[in-house]
Image 1 (tube, rainbow, N blue to C red):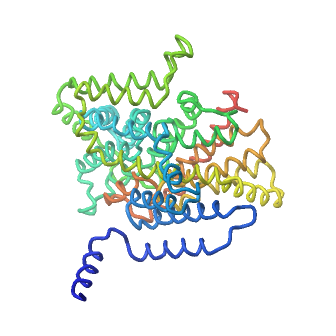
Image 2: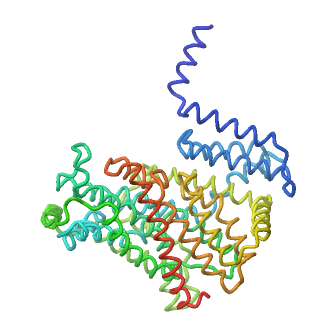
Image 3: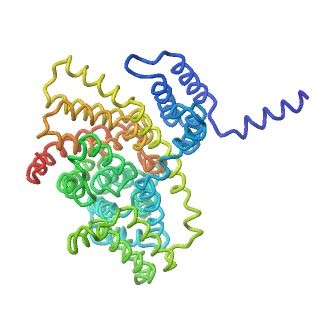
Length: 501
């Protein structure tokens, strides 16, 4: 009997996918929170839901297990605890309710659509074209990577797929062509600079388009809720609001990085030759690439609501419906196949963890936790006697730099954004609420500059070895401050021109 027990213990020790110490810490935190009486103004169910949510976020930060497993754990606990409903059947229905949310399926289906970029080679071709046009200097290569981000961002809602899966391999190929390799200790030739540009273009492009990263639709929904629908951004108005400050940030970013982390090689005429050679090997644009281009154009036209502009509101299509149409077009033309869809783990992983986080955020709102937290923060600010301008600045800065505690932008947005927006809506004069809301939206992606675990793109680029942790954190902090300043100043002026305040 003892032999069998020992064997089972050894098996579990080797096979169970969680980290023991972080798992113990997370469990202790959950039990401690549950043992504490509910604070004044919050009922017991709301406090238990908050404890589950905070513990899930902590487990994700500590990487106890993969984020999808942590999300599934949250679904199980919410169902068993019956905090949302007194019956097991209704509690399970509540725990799974977010999987009917069209916003979640917009992200999942759009990730599946982005498969076509990799499979057809169109993403690689686009990157090489920019390098061939701009690659005579290292700075020019940096701008080539920036333009590649801008072109792909409207169509790739997975910023990880875009920055880590499409652009980073191109960046590494260029760095290796100049013998800039961390394994050889030569990463400083061009690789460190290009890796930084590769990464820091990602948060800015994510801010510029609704469909550029997974958390954006959630941020849009929260802005609408916080303003009672007074500020409801569409795909087009989001892009228009973020266009000018985003372009300025994209222009400034490679120049700042060139000062903060200058490459050893300033001139790189061979990059143009390399890119042209790779394009020659790829040959002419293939039929599949043409179909991919046509599908992207269709998606862009429909997401931009062009038919409704021409023919009237009856021709408006929901963004998720457009995404479904795009995926179907790629499948029936053979651009991607069903096995590609089934094998795209990131999409189905996103469905689970994103759905679970959205569910918990919704339940926190329904159980009064968000309102309770917002009222407490509002009272603290009122007691401090801050002006509305300083209130807006404090809310944006606290929200943005709190990302040091998060390993997922979506988790951060789910945990904090709605509460901060509600506080701002209650303390900032109505005529100035729109720029505050737009700054919060910008901060929800700019915060990804801060750490090497800030979003899915960062561990991919950090793991390639071109950037040390110290440089990553130092440069990340500086870029975060600069980009927030650009969106506050340039964005503030642009939003005034657009009539938002």
